[in-house]
Length: 270
Image (cartoon, rainbow, N blue to C red; front, side, top):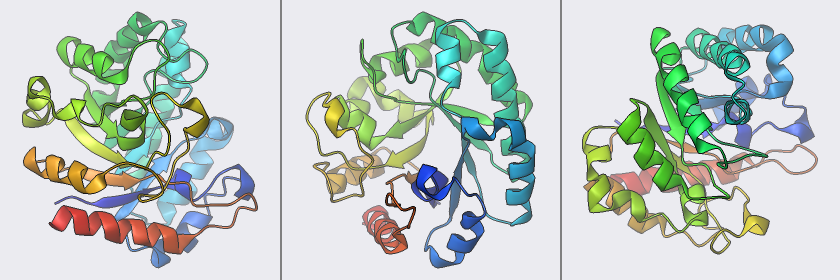
């Protein structure tokens, strides 16, 4: 059964101090099935404290989104430090009861210009995730040299990692249909695509000025068509809403998120 999750990054960010205590306050007001917990680099010095506090809340957290700069370390072959930080993310996931990890294998200042290093990094991190009983998924993060699907194809051929497919990232590269191409049906059949991120996108091809995380309906993605194709592929994993829902004052629009959950629930039920 597909669960509809909410990224904690949609609720807490710099404007409200990334205050993890808000997650317990918001949970009863959200019509969802659990959280995808996002780790921030500013938490590393007190990550154990944060995770213990969140674990005591008794929230359902099936998925953990790894801190995003790990991919940058892999890009420059800082494998020892990348593995150290990744282990901290794995430990957090295990304590929270998560079973799936989302990783930006390439990210930030050096997105995919040194992809060979990143793929070598995936080969190092996957056994570490497995030792914690976690499924490592690589997200189709936007690229500045090539495109996410070509990297996913290579990872599928060279590693055992699985994948998280993000609608916004795909739309940025005009690859929303590419993941359903005949040559990639095997990814669905073999359950290599384990997780879906739902976000809208309002820009054109590689339009960096419009790379915002929007609610469904605020951009130009045809979600009805996307969910139909998802159903055709027999997808049975979870979907996470990532749409940013706090304003510059840190106030969160829970109603907008609840509308997203209902919309996705309706799409999945058709």
